[in-house]
Amino acid sequence: MKVEKKPSLSFLNWGITAIIFFSISFSIVLSSCEKTGVMPQFSSLKISIHHVIDAEDLELFPIQYMNESGNTYSVTDLKYYVSSIKLTKQNGDIYFDQQIHYVDIKKTNSLSFVLDSIEPGKYIKIEFDLGIDSVRNQTGFLLNTVDNLNMAWPVSMEGGYHFLKFEGKYNINSVPYGFAFHLGKSKAIIHYEINLNKGLYYWNEELILKHDLNEWFKTPSNYNLEVDEPYIMNSDSLINVIRQNGFDAFSL
Amino acid sequence: MKSVVCILSIFLIALSCKKDGQIEPVETLTFVSLEAPVNFPEIQLNNSNPLSIEGIELGRKLYYDTILSSTGKSCSSCHLQTSSFTENSSNSQSHVNLIWNQYFLRNGQIEGTLEDAMMFEVESFFHTDISKLNQDPLYPKLFKKVFGKAEITSKEVAYALAQFLSTLISSNSKFDSYLKGQTMLNSSELNGLDIFLTERGDCFHCHSVGLMGDNSFHNIGLDLTFNSLNWGRYAVTMNEVDKGKFKTPSLRNVEFSGPYMHDGRFSSLEEVVEFYNSGVQVTAYTDPIMTKPGKEFGLQLSNQDKIDLVNFLKALSDTSFLNNTKFSKP
Image 1 (cartoon, rainbow over the protein chains, first blue to last red):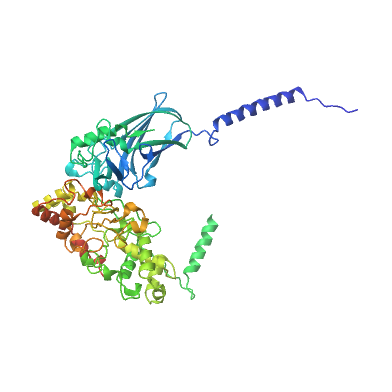
Image 2: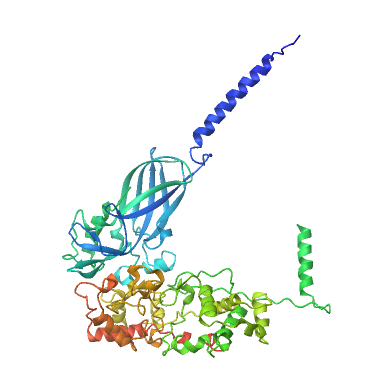
């Protein structure tokens, strides 16, 4: 006679409890491991700047782009500072990045930077400055690197740093001329506010910021290199015209 | 852990014992650091080649020694201290403030550290016969003291030269004193400075205050056409946009470092200033800074402005550097 051993009640209870426990644990792990398996305490965000002319990727040669005024132009150099990056969370909390980031179109590693120690959550706005705030825009404030020294704004012209060096060439009757949009002096700083809809939960989040260089030539003022002064550094009013045009140069 | 330390100690003692049982005294090096002068970039020293007084001295000895070449020449043959470590007939580049350079040679063919540049000089320029150094009665001992190796290779020669060249820092010109508030520039130099630092001359956009260079490359409009003799940076990158670009030279001691430009076409600072004033050639490759409308063909400076600009350039001379006995032939 074969005797079938029935599980005891206590064994049954333990088994059911274990199944429930593992099921719940497994579902928690599943829901929190979309990318990497572990929910970090802080998120980090890599911001990459993508330089374009309208919808095209920027190429530095030859003279091939057309601005709103019909000037055919090229970009030969592009250097600027991005600073005071602020991320606003849905609940109103703010993450602030104190760093001043140097961007040089010819230095690949400068085209992206990482913000660390971001509280996880959904973020609804990114703000940043092109340039450096007046407290820090003082000659000698930044660490003396070759790049920072090359961005120095002459002391005889108020000192501090170039916020932007945007240089290129344009043709008049097939003859190439140069232009240089150099922004500097503290009041030329440009503050950007761009709406976001981005959850930042992990340490490898990414955001691509699009920088459209054609925007510097238009809205609100069509800047015609054949008519308007192509070198603006000596003129506060021209700096302001280009500054105003630059307000919509960045987007997501 | 203690046993590892003990074994290591015994091993080191064994290494330092002569056959006759006498303990050879351990050679010590005097390590030094370099400080960046005011207005200069921070110094990025090469951790794999720590500077020592002994290493610098060895580098100096090599710099002046014809043993590096098979042609009877030394580094100093084409780099005379009195000419800011350049030389007229060979139009060699000045060996001044090279510690801040990332690119070497006029087209930036060598990219990296001073050690990388010196490796090129030892292996590809001088084709140094290292066996001569190893057979020399003095050098093996000096190298062993600095690098701890019995056999000399190209690497140690390059590293020693790099140590010496790291110390060739010029930062004591009249203009430096002026920036520190210790000296006044005269009215002519001040007008020259104004031309230099504003869009009147636009010199500062490539010759940044401090290094008086920018570690970058520019086509300043010297030529209308390009061939292998004036390709410049293009010869390295084969990137069309780089045609005719050459490395910005430092203007420190420029008074003594002629002739000027990559091919030495100008023999005086007056000729250089006149080129910027009236001789710039406009091509698709010319730097935008050089081709302002209304200034397409130069800066349109007055005669007095040109004299003043030259006088300012001469205020970049650093006689303490040119006469520093620490840099002279040992």
